[in-house]
Structure formats: C-alpha cells, structure tokens
Image (cartoon, rainbow, N blue to C red; front, side, top):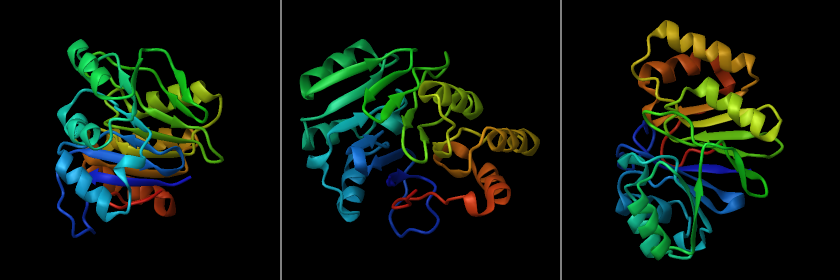
Length: 230
C-alpha cells in the first residue's frame, strides 16, 4: 500500500510552495483524502507528482474546515465522475450541491462503516469539530486523519474496533499544536501502547509535537511534506 501527501503546510524539504491544509492520495484505491485549502495548488502538486486527477475514483472529506475542503470545486470540475464520502456534519446545502456535481455522495454518520472493500470510515466523532477518519485494512492497517480534533488516541481506538485489528500506522494532522510537552509525551506513550509502530504527523500537529514524535519513534517516524510517502 502506498500513500502520498499532496497538500501540506509542513514541508521543510520540498521546493514546492506550502499552503495551510492537508490532502493525501491512497494509490491502490484511487482515493483522494481531503483537498487542502486551494484547488489550483492541489492540482499543480498532483500533476508534478504524476497523479492524474481524472483517474481518481473516490474522494474522502474528513470535515468541513476550509483547509480540508477548499479544493473541492477544482477537483470536481476536473473529474465529476467521483464517489464522495462526506461527513454528515457538512451543511445540507453543500451535500446537495455535491450530489449535482459528482457521480454520487455517500454521507457518513457517527457509526463506523465499510466504504468499499478494504476502506472504512471511523464514523463521525466529536461535537465542536465533527470529523471522521479513514481506516485502511491492509497487511499493515493504517489510519489517516484530517486534523484529529477528537483526540488521536480515541480515534485509534475507534479505528481498531472498526476493523477488529490493531492499527500499525497513523498519518495526517493530529491537532497537538497547543498541547504541552507533557501532554504530547503522554499521547506518544499511549499510541505506542496501542501498537502504533509508524507515524507521519503533519499539518496541524505542531512543530513541538512533530519533534517529540521524531524523538520518540526514531525509525518509525516519517516526515511530512508534499510528495512524502508512507
């Protein structure tokens, strides 16, 4: 299984322009996870990375914040033949508009569900920033989060119960930029106890948290940025 980051604000090693937001591509399933904050930048990054937007079959939207759905219009304009997995926290008007512009929209509620063979939604979690995450059932089960507002440990618990298998890899935003060193270290220790062996924390994770993840995970740490892979 191969996942490539297409849009990211944390990108120290790339010459490409960074913008606030996140998007990733799951190659085996032809699925785009989120769209970043700017559609033109996303499409440019995809072209540079050799990913044909017209070949994408699925679009997973994690939550309603602009830095994750800002590129939706550009993606749909380039490829209207998409099945979109959207959280029920999106506005009804937006969901209605998406239905008229794409092949179909599947709305996910608070209950975990299989999307297609090998891919699952955790179900929407949280009240302040309702969000669902993507679970990939593979030889090395993987969780992709947009921002992880609900708490990455709790999201991992939900993901593991969804597929009844331990999660090994976590990639995406973990929303730890305002946490203290002690709080972050506690989360890292908990993730290790949960069996997470590889992490690619980026976007809203925060520089301090990323540094602590690198220290704590060593070879199991993967740096983010446009073009980064896991």
